[in-house]
Amino acid sequence: MRVLFAAAEVFPLIKTGGLADVAGALPGALVAGGADVRLVLPGLPAIMAGMERLTPVCELGALFGAGRVTLRLGHMAHNGMPAYVVDAPYLYRREGNPYLAQDGKDWPDNLQRFALLGWAAAHLAAGELDPAWVPDVMHVHDWHAAMACAYAASHPGERVATVFTIHNLAYQGLFAMDDFHLLGLPSRLKVSQGLEYHGLLSFMKAGLKFAHRVTTVSPTYAREIATEEFGCGLDGVIRALGGQVSGILNGVDHGVWDPARDRHIARAYSARSLGGKTQCKAALQRELGLNVDAKAPLFAVVSRLTSQKGLDLVLAALPDLLQGVANTGLQFAVQGNGDSDLEAAFSAAAKLHPGRVAVRLLYDEPLAHRMMAGADAMLVPSRFEPCGLTQLYALCYGTVPVVRRVGGLADTVVDVTPHSLESDTATGFQFGPASASALSEAIARAVQAYRQPQQWHQLMLRGMAQDFSWKAAASQYLALYEAARQGLPVHGRPAGG
Image (cartoon, rainbow, N blue to C red; front, top):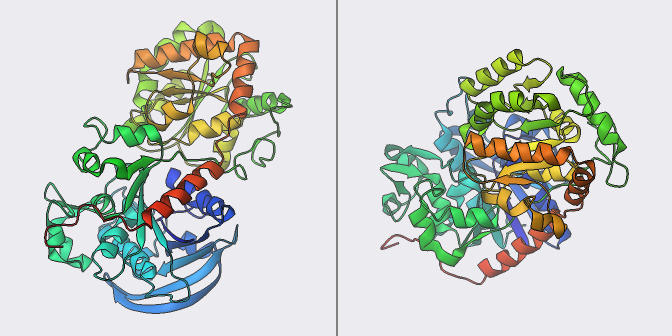
């Protein structure tokens, strides 16, 4: 089966979140399952620099405001995976974040930049741009590539089977409807049964309305987004899709996240020999300026600093936690950046509690590995979480997750209860309400367990024994691709379409 994988970012070339990890790992797992996979990516500087043997496939001319667009085919240098790159210097040759300008605002031409990615994917899928390789399935990821589904569906001829994966429904790619003409699509798609969303143009809706199958990255999140609370205004559209929406849990790339082979951490370790984790903790405490104390429970956060991630709950809980459990020497380490108010508040907390609270306001992949290895527990208190990879990485590193009971967090962490301890299934701590008090209670339970070395040791080992490899997910996707190929009708075609 030939699969075209369309995404805006890919690890390790460029990453802003979990989408890049999925785009970096799932294609290899699909290949291992027997598929022939190629990616199509925007020609961002980091992506161009990370490719080998790039050769022109065809000149596309002037498109979407760019005077010259060339489709190139090469291989990613780090793993040899074949990928098409849409080389449009006018639209993509910009440093930094692929979506945001230096002032933190969206690039003003994002509509054209990501419409071009979707257009190129759809025309590749139609066999028009590279007749030597025509996919059976086009797998499109998040709003950045979602227009591929609309372009494919608007073609009157034979259409490729399409699968659209939602990585985070909150980010929808909304633009002014006045710019619809820039897309080159039939005007019949301007209606609410098409791409219109409360007077705006929605790229996310293109994927929802025109893909043969819609997936998201955990079973619980697939159910949640059909509700008003988590549906971000699209719950009605998602409910209308019914059984066409499914959740396939993300996996872990053990070639990247493995404490036994991790070059970024102070000392390698494994479930059979955990001594290195103690050294990793001491090294992290020294690096961050925390008190070097093996007995102090060290809780870490590795996250974008946004309200979605529940980091305001951590801030609200922090004073009472540091006072109420002062005799334990409880420590907090935070790595990430984002909302300026949250950044300032965490910095203030670190100044107020030197040696017990440390903050690093940056995205740094090697430091994230050291946080995973050095912390005792990992906090993921998200208000919503499509899948969450942080808690999966933490489990691999014997770092016990403390999570809110939502989305993929609920699917991957088994709460410590008398029953789960007795059945030997517990792997972490869950809490329900999105409140500081509920989070504090979960942290207190974790500290109590930490003071029972045998119980904590078992939690660590049980977490490290979990199998969240990409093999299972790849098998589910391959089955889904085959179902999509059976010719089921595209959902949501507008009247007269």
